[in-house]
Image (cartoon, rainbow, N blue to C red; front, side, top):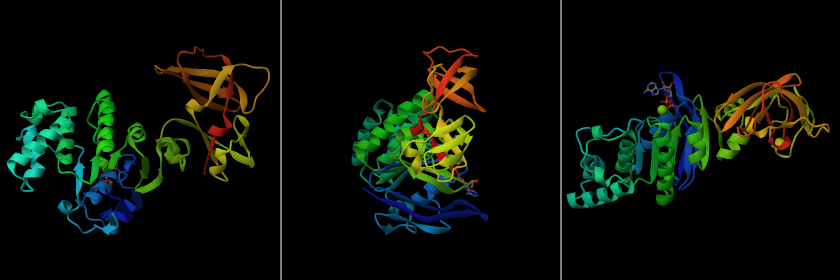
Length: 348
Ligand code: ADP
Ligand code: MG
């Protein structure tokens, strides 16, 4: 197994940095996801780890060894690119065997290993087909098989699910995670899809403009984002102006709010606070006011299938709340809104 380290890694294209001094430490056997919007430098980072792109500055280390100037074929890496890159004139079998044949392996041994690999990706019955006769999901699995058959110690996946439809994506996610768990290779996957990242990753590195904004476990990034940009990128939330009035309190457009223990880890002098849609509780109007409970009125209701999304007028502000759609509420209903202190996160 291989530990991968990126040290102050930069890539500049005609004067503009695509990757700007990033530092990453990927543990042996870890599944790390590079997540960020299009153009933030994910592919370029992956291509540098692979050896397809030479860094402008900085270095790449595998197991404590500097591999920055090592050619691709000496790095024991496997890259599955976004467009699969299958050879159209070769059958599935021949595509998967390609990486082995260039290494001078005997035809018999090649076929044995290819057969085994096709079984793993559940494509044995498709061995004689050509890529044009396969679905997107099957092509995807051939591309993965072709990479895995070379037994890479570091697996690099560039948006492997991008061209698949939603249902297939979920299935492929499980497949990729299972493969990783079975073989234990260090895996770096690139995506712009935060759900995919949260589902797959041991840790996520969130990237914006060539820089890593945060590196942490998925739930930590979702609940405690390092800044507003990360908070917004990681899913829906209420982000509102606030000012600290004491160690455990902030002023907000809704009124004074108590903070929980976890909030202490957030910004010391916050200008904004965040609360995820699903963290807020709504209930019938009650007489006795509770901690962080306010009166509100439903202004808008959106049916999202499993969930209802309500926009509420609360004090001088508005709050968006998501609740199971099994509960029925109407526009104009007066409700009590509770903002759990533990769920309030302070942003710089
Ligand atoms: P991502 O994969 O996150 O979408 P990329 O790494 O592909 O981002 O690109 C990062 C930035 O670098 C983009 O602005 C892109 O236009 C630029 N870029 C990538 N490759 C090249 C190249 N070969 N020549 C010039 N600019 C490039
Ligand atoms: Mg890309």
